[in-house]
Image 1 (cartoon, rainbow, N blue to C red):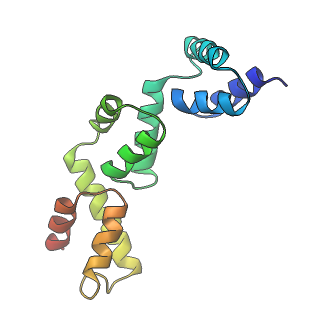
Image 2: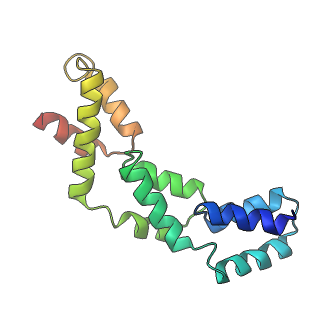
Length: 145
C-alpha cells in the first residue's frame, strides 16, 4: 500500500484538520509540493473538510469529554486551526449550555470528592479550570450549590 492509499484511508476513518493531514504527509516523507497537491485532492473529494472537523471536534469534546470552551479552543489551536475558525466553532456553545455542562462536571466531581467544596475549594477550582471553564462561571456555580 502506498502513502496515498494510507492517508486516504486514515482520512476516511475520522475527521482531521488540514494541518494534521499535512503533518502526517510530511512524516511519511512526502515533499511539500506533493503534500499540498494531495491535500487539495483530498479536500476536493471531501475526505478532508475543515468545517466538518471543527464541528465534530467541538461537539465530541464538549458533549463526550466534558471540556469547557477554553480547553476546546486550546485543543483546536494544537490541531493547527486559526483563531477565526476557533471562534466560529465555539460560537455554537451557548452560555447556558456551558453553564449546564459546568454544573454536570461540578456535581460529578463532588460525587467522587464530596469534601472538596468545603475543605479543599482551591483544588476544586483548579480542577474545573483545567477542564476549560472560566473562573467567573466556576465561582458562580459553586456559590449556587
